[in-house]
Image (cartoon, rainbow, N blue to C red; front, side, top):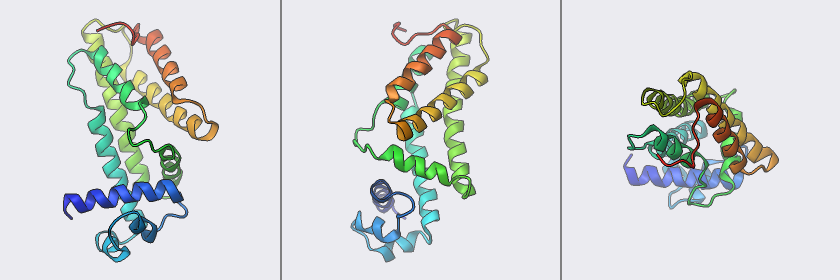
Length: 194
């Protein structure tokens, strides 16, 4: 499948998922959000699950690109990571966190979904652990176990997503909690210039 077709299907899937939710998502509704027919989408994806697996792969790839930071200073990389996590998308899709939560809720029933969410978690933990390790080695952060810090940070982020969707809590509140934890654990504050 060419890149343009793939991008169109992924964008249409995201829009349809946000509008209709997981339970009411159909290939027909995805086609209505694109310039393609239902048959054309079925040509590329046999089932909704197969399409959603590809959608999650695309989402994770874009997220990993967003997390990439060329900064050599680990303090700057940690700040960039938090910005990537907590800065609202430019697309302004306020309903996306709900749609994403619906996909997470399907993970226990769809092992491929679970694997994709594991990949996403692994990507976040890898960035945090590597950044913490580099910061300790450079003398910027207090001594700590990078894997434990990464696990707790990603757990807080995931919990914050639930609080955002289920309780309407502002994600900025979760960022404050993450920053406070990192301050206590690493002696790092985002306001201090690198």
